[in-house]
Length: 319
Image 1 (cartoon, rainbow, N blue to C red):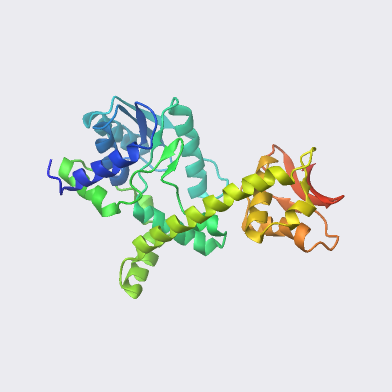
Image 2 (image 1 turned 60 degrees about the horizontal axis):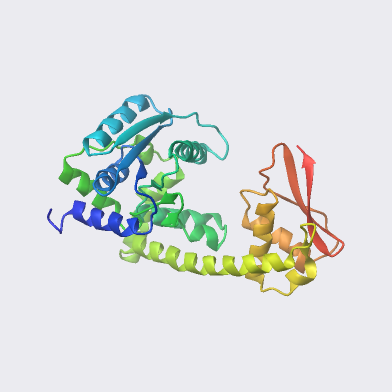
């Protein structure tokens, strides 16, 4: 193999990431697109690999696309390839609903094996821009982790153009998802309009700069999260409330992370920066205000954080 080829570059990236991935075998989430198809071909040459192809059923001919991807996976050396049909709901919009259905299906099908995902540096840059636009704090701007078991992203340092080049070298014809060009999807507009404009205005290198920003913020966020974990244990009362006095001693960034971790442990989900800061004001700007509603993962129950008797406590109400 030519060491300067696209395939060789991808192989080095996946092999390096593989040093941090446990298990004698792995799965690859294969859509049939160039990123996941190139990843599948390279991964199959490194470890026994099962391709998991999720058919969302959102486009005419999606089953045929999935079957082609399955055949390609077998042709490049996968030990198995499985098509999984899912029903996509409506919660959070079409992109979020499809993502939730996909990850649920992959989790159920992986049979304990780690799953490789084909996200590239370009995807990381788009994720950072989405986080910036939503104003949801450093955690969202920190982007995707390269290793978040069971999910692994060995191509996060690789540009999307390299995966297409690898497919060309291997004689593989990837599927080009028409949804990736539809303006109704936010990520598609970022990809085809916003990022090219930023590259033009700022003189290039924007995607790489955004990816570097994600790495720096992720390192900071993980350090603060570890500090918050330690302080959460110290602030918890015997009945699971948060002691206001202990919270008040903490730096702002650490205190809000303690609150976030406590809310998640108590059934919160999809927490926004606005919600966390509102709960934080129960500690720092107490004026007798009522409870703060936060996102709830509890079935048919709304979740509130309230201040009572010198501590934060959680209260539920039926929906």
